[in-house]
Image (cartoon, rainbow, N blue to C red; front, top):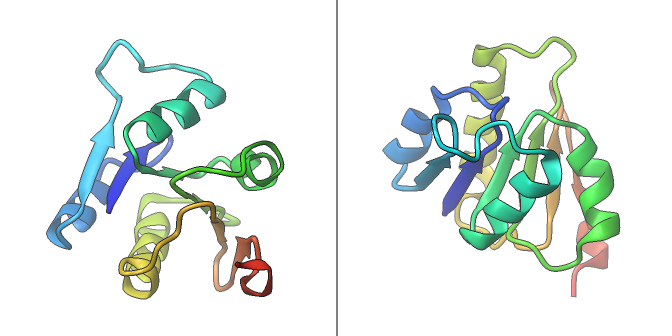
Length: 123
């Protein structure tokens, strides 16, 4: 899989992702740094990448606005911190790294998760 980091996602996630054989794209330090959410999402799509973010707005807007995308994973913790975000990302990779998540948006919470569209809506 290829992952695109929103600027709010911990850089340390790159080690976890690349150790599992996946690719990371991070725009920090480029001329795209500081881009708005719409631009970030479209940059991820241009790269054919799953967007990783802690911005909950993506879970609520992407399914309504965009039907065809490479996937979005939102880590939405009550008290977000690097360790907690990495733990939830690791869980996600253990359960979904060999799954086609195109057109799916995940919200990983402290001990649960949501996915849209739900499995019964897949087809």
